[in-house]
Length: 275
Image (cartoon, rainbow, N blue to C red; front, side):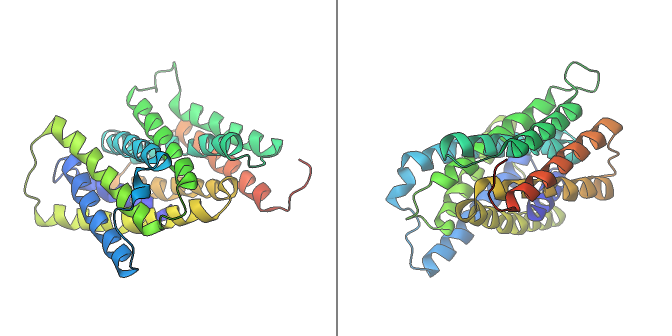
């Protein structure tokens, strides 16, 4: 989560030096090359027939949706607000894990994630002056990421994390190409822009690989609460790097989200018992 927050920070900064879509295309193509190299070093084929299986195709669709809309949210809204709204992802993932994979989620953890959802509503402020339609772009992005995480769990085990990285980064490049096809105006990056995209790519590849490993090897309902830590890192980056000043509803909603996430994490780490 720290890696993703730093990636977001560099992406938002890189937007001042090149179109958003161009930065994502460079990121995606570079990530594909890195994961492909890692796969070949392990003797794995880069494009496995299982990549066309139903779970992987569903995962790819959600990946494009998540990357496309969340990247737009980062570029067009304050980083701290976009990251705070993204913390609703565990609600969808935990619900999906219970419904699709039959994982046991006690009522206390359900209550905790509902409190977290309440925190997101406090940040969104639907129907109030602080509400903006751009906030809904982040909501669409989080639905995409939640679907990706669930589909990652269902991905054929014959595919390695490195192969999944290749396919995921290909979808990132596709999302960037979609944005660039609308905005146009690709430019030759200056030295600062190139350095920002390079840093974004490095942190993004690390974060993506770590998340894939976590979602494939850990219990989803136990791993998911760690997503809440992304908010802390993003909030610090927003304030220190971009001079953002989160208002009281954003801070209050974030506190509800983090508090409920920590409680849910504590419950998941306890031995199974009647809840």
